Amino acid sequence: MSQTARLLVVVALFWFAQYVYIPYTTPFLLAQKVSADFVGLVVGFYGAVPFFTRLPVGIFSDKIGKFKPMILLGCSTAALASVVRLYAPTGEGFLVANIISGFSASMWMCFILLHTKTLNKDNLQRGMGYVMSACNAGILSGFIASATLYQQFGMTLMCALSVGAGFLALCIALTIHEKDEHRLHSPKISELLHVVVNKRLWFFAFIGMIQQGILMGTAMSFSNEVAHSLGAVPWQLGLITITFSASYVASCYISSTTLAIRIGPGILMTASQLCMALYCVLMVSIDNVYALIPVQILMGSTGGLVFSWCSAEALSQIESYRRSTALGIFQTVFAVGMTFVPIIAGLLFDMSGTLDWAFYFQALLAVVGMVATACYYVRRRHVRLREAQAGAKAQQQARSSAS
Image (cartoon, rainbow, N blue to C red; front, side):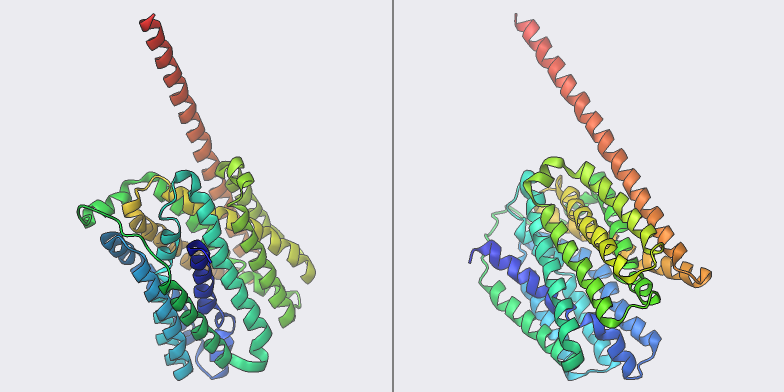
């Protein structure tokens, strides 16, 4: 097996370990009489820890010029977190475990950067598509395992599978070789943080924040409530979730194909965000559970395109020695969307008593992202056209002077 294939397997195993227990964490804890607010704290810490640790992890990785040590740490802590869950299957035990899992998730950028370390700007999108496909394939596998095994074997098996996947990922990661970079000096933190002036990074972080926020506020949360309100039974909810995840994996892979790269991010990202807006409107317009399935495919097949392209475009003008810092900023910004968009959607739900305004709000966000993306690429095309015309004019004047 090639090194690239091994790394992609590690990525899939890592995310399987992080997600196989997630679908049933809340009902498992509530069944043990853990209070709802404490369950919210348990779930919230998984997202809160990476928010504070991603940028320091990115700076540290760029300082040492290596990503493998952080990958090994991520795999081992993913397994350790579920060891804690097995040892202390209580609210407090899951809280400690989710703090460890959140720290483990902070290492995710190092998986991406090791995979794309030697890729130039032209190949960056293809590499990003592959690694995102592996990530979401691992998540999908975790969902399928939990949906088929939890009712019979319970949380103990879910956590045991998580430990096994994390340990296997660690073993495979140990066989991966990372080439040493010959650098005259370790970059200063001020040099690494210079990426904060890169407007392109911030723009695509903003687009990623909208996409990830809508994803968490719909397919990962309130879309299930829509299905439940239409009378969906547990197996139908599982089918809807798996359908979304499978189409998301497919869209991440499609973003890496030659055809997608030839079409380019301007058209694909703009059209995809239009489809995301349409998804939000359709979710509160249909009245049949089975009609949700094609709508879920619409969201999954476009959301992956947006996020893969955002990640590649955000890093495309960043020097390799500070990509980890840049990706830390990028992932911290989109974590804001993952946190606050669902919160705002929930508040709108509580205030109105209906999910309509929660989804219309997110449709509006998708339209804002679509318009911003379209304007960005139209402006970039005009700039490139002017530069090409100026270059052609300079060459013509040079030939005239020579003659």
